Image (cartoon, rainbow, N blue to C red; front, side):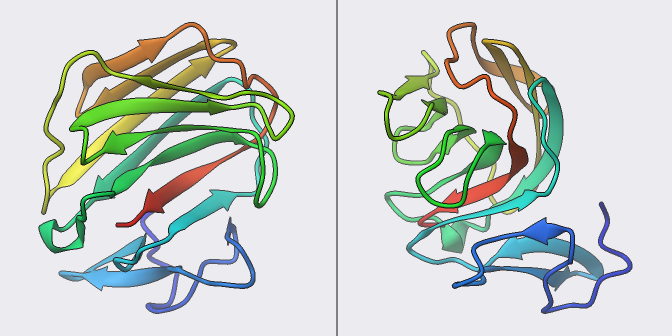
Length: 170
């Protein structure tokens, strides 16, 4: 989505977020409309009202150097089942660890897991990064700028859910 038909400083109708606190808006970035969140110290999600199990999701993430803290994380969320204490798979970058990770949470009644990449890598700041996630059954593959950065075939959260983006302290 290029958000060409959206109004700056507004939230698109088809992107959802917690109704109590709106953090995600359309912004103008050098003449281009982008959807994002201003730097903050909370975890915030936005998602599409679609339900998928086997997912191929591509998103572009731009993180300004000024928006990164010691606890910053950004990424895509797939198979999200609820608003707060939900089951979901989060695929993202942990700036403190300098690693990509998959957070696999089947819900409050189950123990989750976090799988980190074996190697550290840099997430380019002040530029657009293309993130691609393939998830089929228990297998999830994560690509950043067409480079495979992490994969696992032991994902437990395989139920149908929403897809979207998230930030933590970013």
